[in-house]
Every structure is written in C-alpha cells, then in structure tokens.
Length: 489
Image (tube, rainbow, N blue to C red):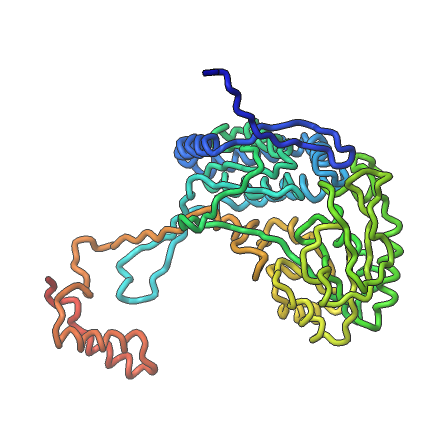
C-alpha cells in the first residue's frame, strides 16, 4: 500500500480587493492546532497574570510607542488588505488603537485593583469586604474583516492588560493585518504564547453549550434622524460620510436616513450632489475618498425606490468597485430599510413628526447605534433617550467607536455584552467578592441559638435599623439589648 499519501491542506488567501492581487496564502488551522494553541495559552497565562497589572501596563505603553512609530506601515498594510483609503486606515484603525491603549495605560490599574465594599447593615459591621477582579484565563477573539486592526486590537489589549492570554482568529480576508498586530505585541514584550493568531475560515462552536461567557457584536441597521431645525449642509455631509465611510462596510454605518418633510427635497439633493463629488479608486491613492468592497457582491436596488445617483458596479475600476448610491422615496416595506446592507447605499425617507421618526427608528430588529441631528441639543438628547440603541449620537455618527471611554454595545439583535472603556474591561474579568471577619474568635449572632427571646431581639434589631421615626428605633434598640450575650451552639 502506498505510504506517501498527501492530505490536502486547506488555505485562505489574503487578496488586495482593489487589484485582486494575492498577497499571501495561509494554511487553515484545524481542530488539533486550535486546541494546541489554547493549551499553550493556558500554560503561559499563569505567569502573565502573576506579572501584575503595572508590568502589563508597561508593556502596553511600549506597544503604543511601537505602533505610533510604525503607524504609516500599519495603515498601508490595512489599505492593501482591506481596501479602505490610507487616511481612513490611520483615523479609524490606527488612531483608535493608540487611544484605546492610552485609556488603559491611564486607567487599567485603578479599574482592576481590589475595590473595598462598605457594609451598611449593622449586623455586618465586623466584616471587611472587597471586590476582586480575576482574569478568565484564555480569551478567544473572532474578528471581522471590515476593521481588521482596530476591532481585534482594542479587545486584545483590554484582555491582555487584565491578565488574560488571547487566541485571535481573524477573518479569512485579513490575516496579514492580524499577524502584524501580533508582531507589534510580541516586540513590546507580550510572550508569544500569550497572544497567538490562528488563521482559518471556520467559526467557533457555540459557547452556550458550555456556559462560556461571550461578548457579541452582531451588526446593525443604524438610523439617522434629521429634525426640522437641523442644518442641512452639515447634516447632509454627516449622512454621506456616515453611509459611505469604508465603502459602507461598517456596522455603525448610516443605513436608514429619516428627514423631516420640510427639509427632505433640499437634503436628498445635497446628499446626491456630495456623493457624486467623492472619488472612488485604490485606497493607496491619496486623492481617493472611497475604496473597493472587500469582495465581489451583487447590488440590487429596491423596486419603487428612486435612484438619485449610483446603483451600478464600476467594472472599469475593478471587480469590487461600486458606485455610491443615494435612494429616495423608500419605505419600510422595502428590504433596503430592514436588512443590513453593508455597502455604499444611503436610503432616505421623509417623516412628519418627531414621534413618527422615533417609531421608524425603533422599527428594526437591530439596535446598535443611531444619530439625531438638530440645532437644539436638549431636544436632540431628549429624542435620543427614546431610541432603542446601544449608542445614540447627537450631530455626529460612527465616531463613537473611537471614544475609548465610551462603551460599544448594542441591544436587540445587535449583540450582547460591551467592549471599550470601563465596561469593556469588566467583560474581561471574573468578579469575585472576598469577605473577612474582623472578630474570628467570636460566634456570629445569626448562628444557631434560636428561641423566643432571640426572635424578640431580632424584631427589635430590625426596628433599630429600619423603622420609621426615632421613637420606634429607640424602642427597637431596647428590645434588641442583650443579643450579643446570647448563647450560641
């Protein structure tokens, strides 16, 4: 029998979406390789945790320095592999990670250290308690291709500074960027087994089967509401950027735009005019505003919608280029207003009242983010509170992801859990309550030794703490007298 049978190895290819050039191929990790990586991470994590938060912050500071020095190289790699313009790679990827590192350098030690817990109950005054934050051990990150550096990096640095090891499975479209992140972290001092990259095209098994904690960001259909007092020139520019940044391939993209009927005609005309002015092409060209989509997709315009501009592929530029599309006369019967688009499309619908705008914004299975545009900040914030979304911005859009102090999260079908800031760091640790008694040689009042007298004392003790009125409390104090002298088992 032949003994030299070769088993084919599955691979994933990193491809420049602008030129369709194959940049590199990677062998897909199988179940055995993934398991081995987790075993190595678990073994290395103990020492990483024992290094302490100050040492980990020091390494994070070095990572930040290295990334700042290599910012241009990293941004160019992102552009080559993901297609977005170079300046967008700097702003929406590299800057976001540098600032996330800044937040953790400034705050991680304070947020991770033990937190004292006061005891208001008189019965517990002899105790001292604290909240302890412990790393989970190994954190698995499955990251998408649309922001191949900022999404995995912001989550990885939070996991690492909390004392966890990380195994990252990047999108099969953007493995090169993931390995560049690993190179930077390792050069900064993160041990190789503490941060590993596992390329492949598979997805993780459901964590629910093992009751594993998860954080999931599952997409959005973000609404933009333009009120009747909004500045059309500003809001239309915000809509065009919010819809077309990264060629519309952002979970936070403006995917539904609702404009007060009094401004509707002027607004849609301004959006169409500005969309036509944007330059589409290879993101490495500094004059380009919009790059390609990451891979070839079909474009279908909803029947009944009025196409103001776009709606076609730009095959003269390449297989993955699409014209920026602005649609008018849309409604909620159309799929374009209900399903996540993930492409350069801006559908605009009119509304008559603020209540109608809120109903339309909330008429979605998603709830990641939203925006309200108005000259009256108080009015905008009041409306924002009525919108079902994890984040609502007033007079801006998308940029909330770059605010390191703010949590990034969604409601409804947009996900569970949080990333970024204090709440994102809390997702990377187990919360343990640690309590010590100050009088270890004394039997506790509530231990066995029950009886009628003890019951009367406890009634009085409750009145002492919680009864309304000074007289009732004083009577309670007298009834509870002698409770400490009672005999216990």
